[in-house]
Length: 200
Image (cartoon, rainbow, N blue to C red; front, side, top):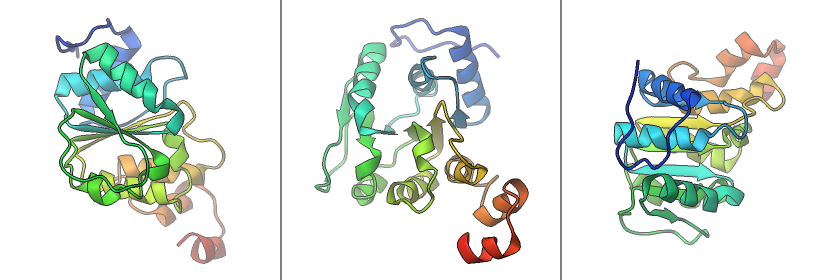
């Protein structure tokens, strides 16, 4: 179905970006956007935020692209974004539409982040959630439980094994992938003893 973009958008989207927006709308903002690198996944996500007025939004990304997100957001919408740095616990309520934080400090800032009542989380380079034992993966799972919209962005959704894909899917659509053992039996061809020794 055709969609229009808010007046604050300063760039004309491509056809594939419009289709990504339509897909996100049709799935209530719970999607994995796995376009190839360089195709403008960040702009597709910003388009969704603007179209659905899904504010405030938290962007979680690698440290190396935090300034990229701030720049993209301000360039395409003209709005300010705040970047969180360091592990000193933040306090108070944020007033900006967009907050950007890196995966490395996500767990440390989790109590404060849970207080912000974000409408949307964007997980950039979502494949870094592949290890379900990592602190940032567990923190992302916690945040996603209390956030209506979760958009995962990655050009490499499965880097190694199918087992590495479950944490990403669980964060985005927990009702479809509620637990790892059932996913593993269906998609990972495990041995019985491996499930109960290593995966529970």
